[in-house]
Image 1 (cartoon, rainbow, N blue to C red):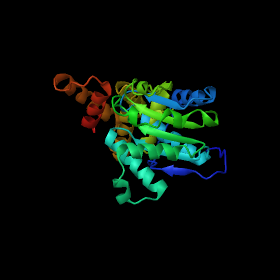
Image 2: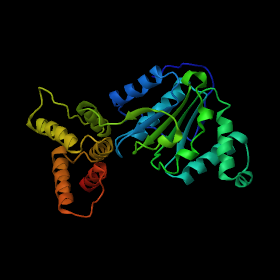
Image 3: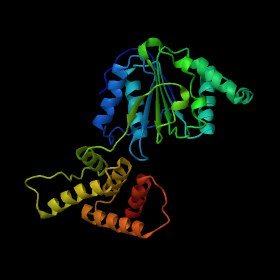
Length: 287
């Protein structure tokens, strides 16, 4: 249950769905973000960086849904920053909704004019939390983010932006010093909880009264988690597969995983340097 910090109405924009029942907060990440917001009274930008599949977007979803429930901000918004076109499309929708303009009126505005309208609208809120998701293109995205002067430091840090990115440099052209949170993998216990929440109640935690089959399942679960590198995307997908297929033991799933891993090692067409790409490929092969 979130603490309601205000009775003020909250304006929301483009908020994605969030599966709170299956979400497991990585404690170290949540603490780093909240401590940064507390200690840096004038912080306006939090940059979450990490490998693909490590949970940046899910963490951001958790933050915005918590903000909406607690009514801590006047505006909570979500923008896709995977490309300039996607970001500007969200900007146009935001302006159209806030100004009450028609799509025909919006077509008359240049991209620069839309950007200006977004900043003008944001300046009307004394507090907001905005997420710019998948902001990996550090060449084109920063110039389209809200103006530094719009964010300012008004309200003692109550205007916040969160960037999720696989790259550390995306915020550098903004001229803003962010609170940097590098998203790592969860602890073994957190990864096990992710697996079990997705596995529809199947438990893989060691217990003194377990029989040999149960002990085998528990051992296989712990090994599978480690072999995925505890990557949340892979762990969640495997857990969901187990939940949908109760006839498949985790011992069998581990065997499939290792077969997929062997197949990958025998191939020479997976050139990605991002290890998470290979992990997800094995995961999909396993299922």
